[in-house]
Length: 165
Image 1 (tube, helix red, strand yellow):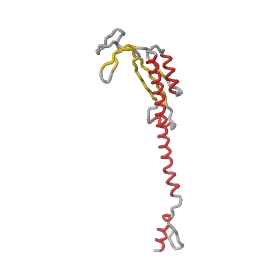
Image 2 (cartoon, one colour; image 1 turned 60 degrees about the horizontal axis):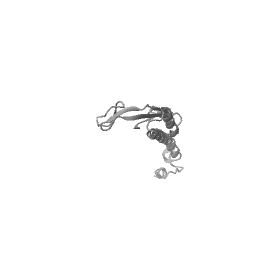
Image 3 (spheres, helix red, strand yellow; image 1 turned 90 degrees about the vertical axis):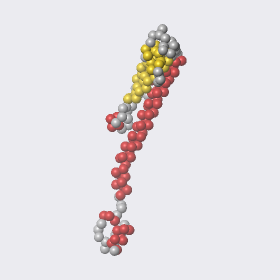
Image 4 (spheres, helix red, strand yellow; image 1 turned 30 degrees about the vertical axis):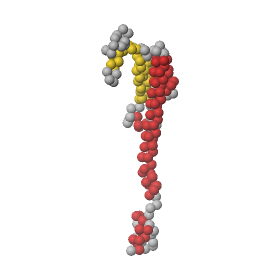
């Protein structure tokens, strides 16, 4: 009886049998050693997700600034100028950008799709074909944890087509 009480209280007396169940020393260290790597991997994954979202947001800002400039210049901005705006406004290193030449298209349907036209084409809606520019930006995100690139696509991209006239 004395030995059982000693085991339950966590203390050992001279008469109690040797037993490892009575001690709790080191249990917290073992639990921490088992849980810490998993927690660190989760933290790194959350950090990577946040940084990837930030990079995507900066890329979208760059493309948005270029489309705004294309509208303000009514399509007279050069492709090189629009590319430079995407790269500069995004503030990311290694952004590749592309801007199409001005094309004539008719918008039709819901959601709107563009149908190729000429400058003299009258669209189905009765309006004259509009002038459009398509601007695309892409960026390859490098994750903090190299293994995450196998789980998710690390190439971020954004495309905007805007009517300039």
